[in-house]
Length: 141
Image (cartoon, rainbow, N blue to C red):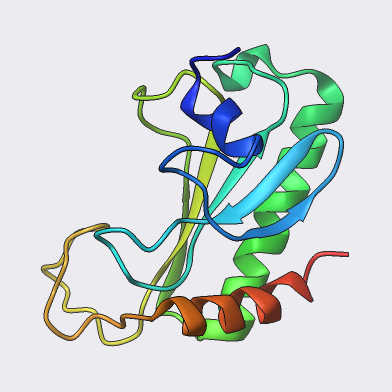
């Protein structure tokens, strides 16, 4: 689909493009681009096929998504030692299946929500993100 932001991302264009950690014929796993939230450890598991919802996935996609999300969570745990790793299938801004897998960094105050910025939150530069993504890639194989 030509007007889908995630399909465009998979073609390497648009504002959603971030470092790719792993890909195959069914899925792409990538890190969120730095943009406004320059914190490390926010990954997306996305189907290559343009499909809007979990219940529309093919059986092979379901298995591939589950394994990729599990590997992503384990990679974040190993490389960032977070307080928690969250996973969610939420939002309807883009009608293309995508699962969020992201770290809640150690030291995050209890009153801070999932995505709320806070002064002590870890931030990374583009160079640091590239280095983190190189380490995260080693967990997919």
